[in-house]
Amino acid sequence: MPPRRVDLNLYRIFDTIYQEGSLTRAAEVLHLTQPAVSNALARLREVYADALFVRTATGMVPTPLAETVAADVRAALQLLHGSLGSAKAFDPATTPRRFRLAAGDLAAATVVPRVLGEIARLGLNIGLEVSALRREALVHELTSGQIDFALDAVAIGDPQILSMKVLSDEYVCAVRPDHPAVGRRISLKQYLALDHAHASSRRQGLGQVDLALKRLGQQRRIAVRTPYHLGLPHLVAVSDLAATIPRSLAAAHDLRILKLPFEMPPSELFAFRHKSAHADGASLWFRELLGKGAHEIDIHPNKPSPSRRRGPSR
Image (cartoon, rainbow, N blue to C red; front, side, top):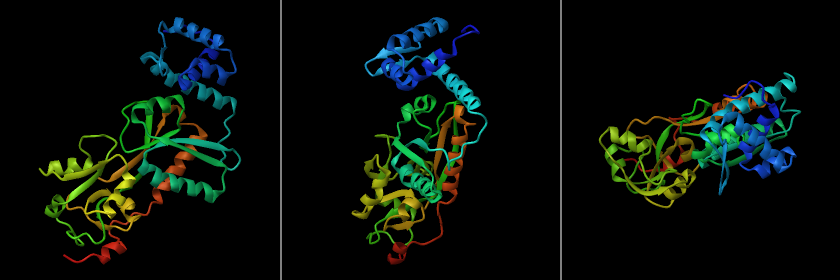
């Protein structure tokens, strides 16, 4: 355990090394010399009796103890900065801000445009920076402050990470409008007889659709597997493939939309954040914006699409 009296500047240096993954870049950010940063790290190593960061080919990698300490350090620094800046609430109309998000292609195409549209409608000087979703690095990126939010469907099993639902959509079966084997409705037998396109970030393994079918003792034929959810409607449009996708994605393309012949949980997206940002005014405002975008998503499970009306009745 560290002694009660530790120079608080050491923790600021620790947090910067954690964020930057480099002593050189940390020194540049803090406007210090690299020897000064190295000396500060040496003092913290002595305090914690741990290396804290290990030099590798990709940079300074935190030890398990450093990962544990980092969350508390960032929360304490954020609380300190908040108190120094007074209790003044974040005002998006007067305070420029850039929010950094990590998102997959589906979240980037559904949630992000609605958020951007609301920002434009309000005429705010708020920017968005969207980066690729790397699930293996999300906890570190959220803890270090490299990103403010992550948009994903997969839960993060870390007590430091908080979440809120931002989208819930019905899964449907989508095929091209003139598909020769599908009419306005589809039976389970017809569904299983089709070749399917499936999107997943993993190269193998079962998705939600396959797990639902497995519970029925059934299995579909996956002819095409891709990591790009937004590519599925385009694959379906030029082939006899079927894709089981969120209704909102199918409705954005000229496809025949069919109710699934089996029960499926909805397609859900969540916004994840680090608990250190829970009381941050800017984070609170952006969470409200994300929630508003979710409520405005136009999902009508029983509303027929034009392409469905063109299909032959069977």
